[in-house]
Amino acid sequence: MKASVFIATSLDGYIARLDGSLDWLPGDDVEEHGFTEFFASVDALVIGRKTFETVLTFGQWAYGTKPVIVLTSHPGAVIPPPGAVCEAMDASPAEVVARLSSLGIEHIYVDGGITIQRFLAAGLIQRVIITRIPVLIGSGVPLFGHLSSDIRFEHVKTQAYNSGLVQSEYRVVA
Amino acid sequence: MKASVFIATSLDGYIARLDGSLDWLPGDDVEEHGFTEFFASVDALVIGRKTFETVLTFGQWAYGTKPVIVLTSHPGAVIPPPGAVCEAMDASPAEVVARLSSLGIEHIYVDGGITIQRFLAAGLIQRVIITRIPVLIGSGVPLFGHLSSDIRFEHVKTQAYNSGLVQSEYRVVA
Image (cartoon, rainbow over all chains, first blue to last red; front, side, top):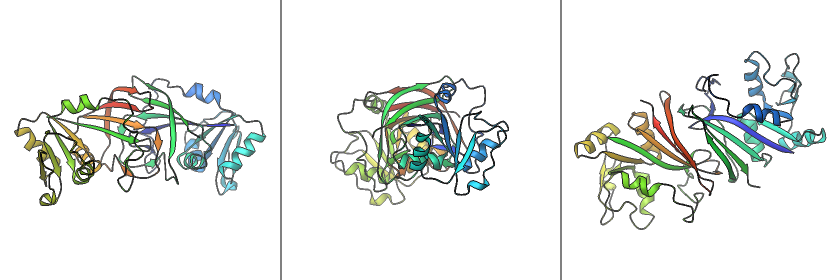
C-alpha cells in the first residue's frame, strides 16, 4: 500500500494559524493545482480528529463517499455526518495500514499535521506533495515535527503557478 | 538600497541543527545554484554574531574583501580575521541600512536566522531566495520566526536542480 500527503503550507511551514484558521490560504479563484486528480487517485483517507472537526465546519462533507478513517483516542466522540463513509479508530499508523491493506485499499491520503508527523516518523509515507503559499504567517500549526532521525526525500518534480503557488513532489527515500 | 536573503533550508525550514551543525547540507559536489552570481551582485553583507562565528570555523574567511557588518550587542568581542573588511555594530536594522546607504552601498546580503528575522520584521528585506534541501532534520535553528503581522511575497521564479534542490525567488510585497 502507498500513502501520500498533499498539503499546502505557508512559506514558514504552517498548515493553519494557532486558532486553526486558514484565512491566509488563497481563495477559490486560485487555479486548480492538481488536487482533483490526486484525490481521484486515492482509495481512502486517514485524518486526525482536529482535521475531522475542521472539515465539519466546511458545511458539506468534503470527501463524498470516499472511506475516511479518523484517528482519535476517543473514537466514541466522533460522529460522522449523514452520508459520510467514516470510521473512528484509536490505532497506530502501522495498525491503520495493516487494517486498510487487508480491505484491499491500495493508496491512502494522510492528512492533518499530527497524523502526517506520526506516519512520517513510522516510515509509512511514500510520497509528499507540498504546495507553498507565498506568505509568512509568523506562527501556527507546523506541518512537520520532531524526528528521531533525518528523513531524506528524492525530488520528483516542481511546478510554479501564476498565482505564486509553488508545488513540489517528493518521494521518501526508504 | 536593496536587501536580499540567499539561504538554504531543510524541508522543515531549518538553517542549521540545534548545535549549529550543517552536516545535512549537500557536499561540494552539488551543482552551482546561483550563489556565485548572487554574491557578485551584493556590495556588503550584514550577518549576526552566530553566523560570524560559524564562518570563522570554515578556516579561510568566506567573504574576501567584501565589507561585512556583524550585528552584536558586544561589538568589542568581535575580532575580524586578518584581511577581512569587517566591522561589528550594535544597531537596529534601520540604523544599519541608514549607515550603509550613506556610504553608497546599494545592495546588501542579509544572512543568519535572527538577523534575517529582524530585517524582515522591520520591512527591510526586498528579496528572498530560498533553496530547499530535500531532507527533514526534525529540529534546528528556524529560518523564520514570530511576526506581528503576515508578510506577503510575490513569486519571481523557481528552479529545480538535478540534485533535488529546489530554489524559489520571491519579492516581498510592500
